[in-house]
Amino acid sequence: MSEKILVIGANGQIGSELVIALRKQHGGQQVIASDINKPVDAIKDSGPFEFANVLDKEALQCLFQKHQPTQVYLLAAILSAIGEQKPKLAWDLNMNGLINVLDLAVEFKTSKVFWPSSIAVFGPHSPRQNTPQYCIMDPNTVYGFSKLAGERWCEYYHTKYGLDVRSIRYPGLISWKAAPGGGTTDYAIHIFYEALKNGTYQSFLSAGTKLPMMYMEDAIRATLQLMEAPAERISIRSSYNLGGISFTPEALANEIKQHIPEFTISYADHDPRQAIADSWPQSVDDSQAEQDWDWKLEYDLPRMTADMLKNLKNTLNL
Ligand code: SER
Image 1 (cartoon, rainbow, N blue to C red):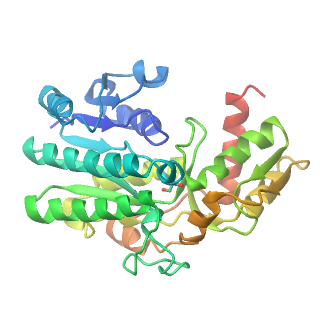
Image 2 (image 1 turned 120 degrees about the vertical axis):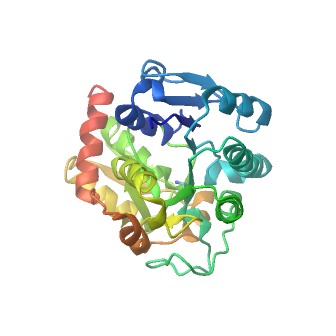
């Protein structure tokens, strides 16, 4: 049976790359991109696009009715840093958007749903090294506890309604095609732009702030791999830990210096994102993903850095 795939929040950092990857796999017409904002050309020109606000359940229902999707990817969200500026909106979008989609997926018998969670579900009392799949979770950002509550809803819909919902706790995602979405890990993208354009960068996180990160190539591959795995191999219906590469701003700057020797980095004195970063894991144990759907990372720090610089140089015409 051919798939009909609906991607909600298609214009964001993950969506803009995932839509293209899904269209390559399934054909342009089979993948409906939707977002509250106008799409970029790469999405508009490669297949159907629909405007939709995930909080408008009636409009969303029309979309399900019209396209009868077999798979839905819900990517619309407010991330950690912006979520602290707009806590009620973040809760509303991250929570009610998810519940709307889960309800419609049950109503329209959608075969599979993907929803992203995050390392932000962990908090100050979670173990920070090699953070296990199951441990104390006391997230203290609205983004983090909306993702944790969302994970509980996903598992609940699986248990109660048999919905095949799958999820990944992404580390900070590093990419060059679309701008990052207002998170705590965004420094690891800004640094590349500034290194290439100005040769210097002021990091809003301190030199030694270690966080798990992942190159978008790996994140997209992980997402497709999880969605293609046979249902009986999916033992986790909340969300899978994914580890990626753990590094500090200082280590990333040193890696960039391998390519741009004159690059310099400085560090901001106070930034509200520092406290968020300090409450998150430094590294994550993803052995369950390895065991259940053969997950394996491909991009380490040197490979990711080289690829980012090469692609961004082209994009920025440098
Ligand atoms: N990258 C996200 C953020 O920083 C974490 O999921 O908010």
